[in-house]
Amino acid sequence: QAQLVESGGGLVQAGGSLRLSCVASGRAFSSYAMGWFRQAPGKEREFVSTISARSLRTDYADSVKGRFTISRDNAKNAVYLQMSSLKPEDTAVYYCGARSDYGLGRTRLEYEYWGQGTQVTVSS
Image 1 (cartoon, rainbow, N blue to C red):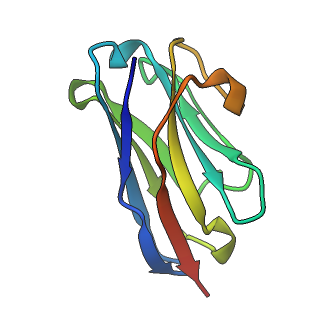
Image 2 (image 1 turned 135 degrees about the horizontal axis):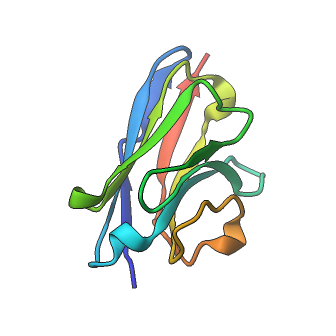
């Protein structure tokens, strides 16, 4: 089992940057693919980015490509989401997910474990 704790959210002006972190418990972190999803009020949780277990592959939603970068540090059991050029439409609760598979995961159903989320608010 994995327990995930996100941090790094906050209030930022449009055009600004934030770095989200997600730290996982458990010894099998390096065998889990990880992902970031977000959920805005009144909307479904949507895919943002994913990274394979050994960092060889990444993928992004079209809406964040070129602005967000996902990375991980298996020695620290951590995955990060560097967000730049933030827009008001990026406002959401951001969730970290883990799946017991080496490959990328682009849908919610592929993830077995979730954190509690961290709020990101981008003001115009």
